[in-house]
Length: 186
Image (tube, one colour):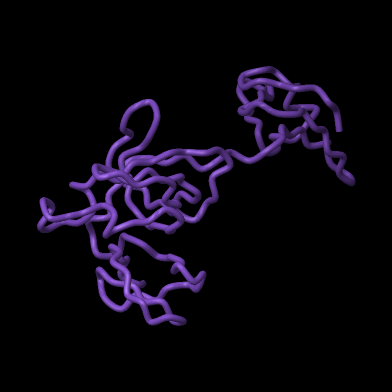
């Protein structure tokens, strides 16, 4: 293994001397790098060595419009809930992405009657859909469809709450009912 860092399009060798491996491509009998990474030459029995380019770390998941995200509620104010996006689809995020669930994006009907504090609380884990890339600071998210909303919440006593309707969760210890916009289970 060499510690030589290569960039996309950089020539690595001749096709007559090496086999093409991951992170490389062949054009006009020359092998080029297709990604940024470390150049590696893997010896094989009886064949030509294979030339590859490996990345140091995997690409992080990045939220896109219509992707499903799992996020944790950080702050709540009367107009929106601020969330930290933890998972995009089924891929965990390596960087921190911030999202906003506006009051008009909480549910599909009776949007004017929505109170954010009755839908989300800080610490709740929410499944939502990205509806817009938003501004430079955050993505705009929606929980308007039935399958989106709170998927995990803790009560004041520290127990994991159980959804009992689409807008209520109950503490199993104290039997206290709190308002939330619950996600329909899969």
